Structure formats: structure tokens, C-alpha cells
Length: 168
Image (tube, rainbow, N blue to C red; front, side, top):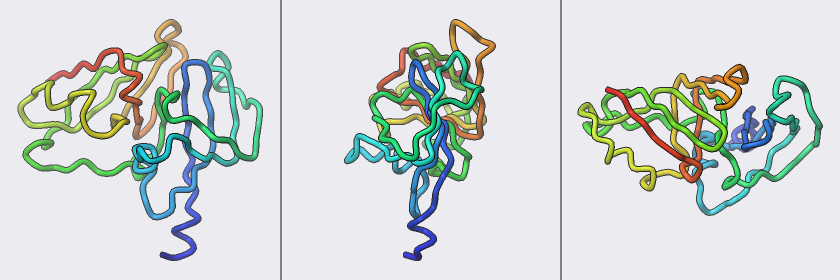
């Protein structure tokens, strides 16, 4: 592995029910989604961290050079599409479906890869990776829709799901 690969820093916006936390994560040769879905580590080490309350998420908040973030307390993370593992385009995930995901304080909308024939059981929230990938997605604060965020890829914590709705 080259030293460049081991020093790759990726910009990520993390969200909890109360805060937006922006920073950089060292990913090495793997995409960020692999680190987030790695169940052998319950925390992420984040560099150049800015923390803002959701009510003032657009403002630059408090700064810290480094912080640990608990994966289980994250609602979702926004990254560029190159930082997610591309979906397997087999017969089980050959089509994109519109998804609406609700979680405490948030509503997320985007596209999710799935089978050609829609079957909600294949999208079971208890299956597969701990974080659901939405492509070309947006999130809004449920009780204040003017506070909204969007990105190429949003990774939603399955443990925070209240509902997972799919459309054909």
C-alpha cells in the first residue's frame, strides 16, 4: 500500500438528533462506507472537526483538531458518491427505487438499489450493513423543513430507522 493511500482524508458531514458535525476521516484505500459499516469499531476518529447545533447548522461552530464519534449515535452522514461501495448490479439489485426514510427528527429521500421487482422484504432494516445508502438524496428536519441538507450519497443508520418506505 502506498503512503498516499494510507493518508487519504475524506470530508464528511455527520448528523445526530441535535448537531451537525463536519470533519475529515482517514479512509486509506477503502471507501468511507466500509469504515462506517465496519462493526469491529464502534467509534470513528475525525479530524478538523466543526460542531454546530442543528438550529444553526449553516454557521461555523466550535472547532476541535480531533474527535471521536460514536457510530451508534449518528443518524446519518453525507459524503460524495465515490466514498460508497457501488451496489452489486445483479438480479437482486438491478434497479433503483425511490425511498423515504424517517428517523428521530429527520426525513430522508433518495434512491436505493434493489431488485427489479419491488419486494420490501429484500430491504429489511435488520439485514446487511448497519448503514443504508441513499443516492442523490436529501434530508430535512421534520419539524422545520427549511433546515435541509443534500448530497450525492447519504448513509442512514439502520438502528435509527422509524420507517423505511419504497416506491416503484
